[in-house]
Image (spheres, helix red, strand yellow):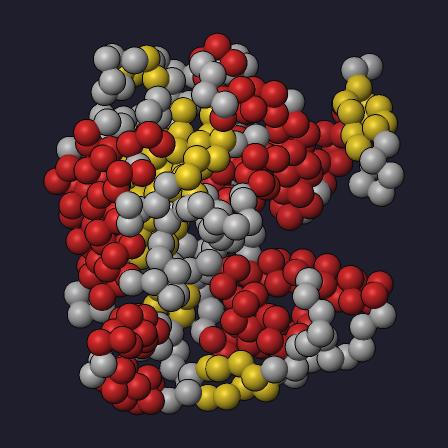
Length: 404
């Protein structure tokens, strides 16, 4: 009987497991457990690429150093702008690769056999985890257009996951920076561009962030680039920082009485669907990704209370207060970006539902919807790991001094 290799998570010892038994275990595993197994396997594969990456980052020939690609990934070669240089369809640049979504796109692309290059800003703490996974890291900044062309040489596909940080200007990063990136992609004759937008952004022209996203969609459509726009409803990861952690630390969380519903999706699932869209020759130009179920803020807080085993300290914020604060901050130039972000927060508290049907999307992309993680599964898994860790370190009921 042929055997599969398995690695013990405790000792790191490699054992031989009958292939049939390994397949049975995988079929019985939950989506989250299966996902962790796939991440471990991806990390092992990444170690085998480190020699290639070192040569590539030192400026040596990528095509000479690159390993052979799987037949189901490699497609016909296209032509880049510089002297007709052949470019593999598996060559990819991920912009915003260190972000919540970007890092998941990088990992999924590497697991799918892509040669991934990551555009990141120069910073004191290098993005070594991307190199450890098997990606090539190049420095660049959307607000510095001159830094973009070198990162795009030899690239077939660009996946744009970047967005401005809370302290940054939305206009400078999400509008001017994206225009510069798209124009550079035009000049470099990039073959495919994927842009992440916001669901219903076309319905809120008075909200700066929504308006910028919609205008970027239109600019991209007029660019002539082969592109896909993916509109997102919300990330499950945002629930952790806004509600799950504060409740665990016995801190106040802020909520409203409105009935706004958001269909949160795990960024791992967003990445999986995004990579699936690249494999479809005639994929829709605009896709909307939404989680399996939509929740109000009150329902999210209730789930956190259930799995944390603690009551939340909820501070209700009236919608009129958000509106009044946004108007007050708009009077000062130095708070204009705060005003823009509060306008977006106001939309999220307006009884509008950020949810979309996904049956046709799953069918088009050939993805099993049953493998999509639900918010209940995500929170239950998160709290089980955190509470287990707290128990191991002997933490008391108040965990404000621990960073996990």
